Structures are given as C-alpha cells and as structure tokens.
Amino acid sequence: LKNKNVNVVTVTPDKEKRSRVIAQSDLFEGGSIFIQEHAEWREIFIRELLDFPGGRHDDQVDALVQGLAYQRGQWLRELKVRATTGY
Image 1: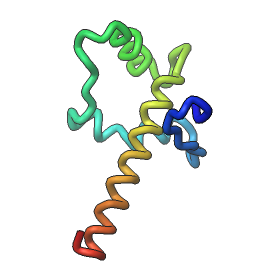
Image 2: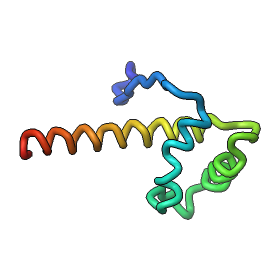
Image 3: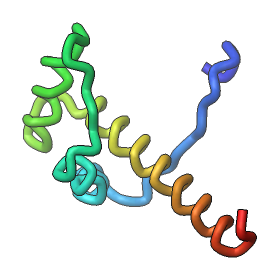
C-alpha cells in the first residue's frame, strides 16, 4: 500500500487479540462505533464481531480494534500537547 501512496502506519501489537478487544470495548458499549446501515459488508462484519473470540475469522475485528487504539493514542497525544503548550 505504501508503494501506491496510501498512508499506512505499521503497528506492532503489544497484547494478544482478546486483550486488545477488551481495551476498546468501552467504545462499543458507549455507542461510539458507527457501522453504516446500508453497507453491503455490514452483516458479515457484525457477525465476525459477535463471533469473536470463538469465530472462524477475526482479522476484521483485530484491524478495527488496532485502528481504534491508534486513534485513541493520537487523541491522547493531542490532549497532552494542548495541556502543555496551550494550543
């Protein structure tokens, strides 16, 4: 993807999949995750989420929670910068 000018960030997980999902579960429970109602991939995606951790597939679950963790880290870094610089 990098060769096709797609912005990609390499992430090396520091926990196993189940722990990564648990770390982001508050976003699901709080209603912060929006899945397009009419997306053709929606049902398969939701099924994979609901079947985790015992489902046959979990790559989409893993990609989602790693992306959420990354964004959460970015947001926290931004808060720290604002707190220390005032901007």
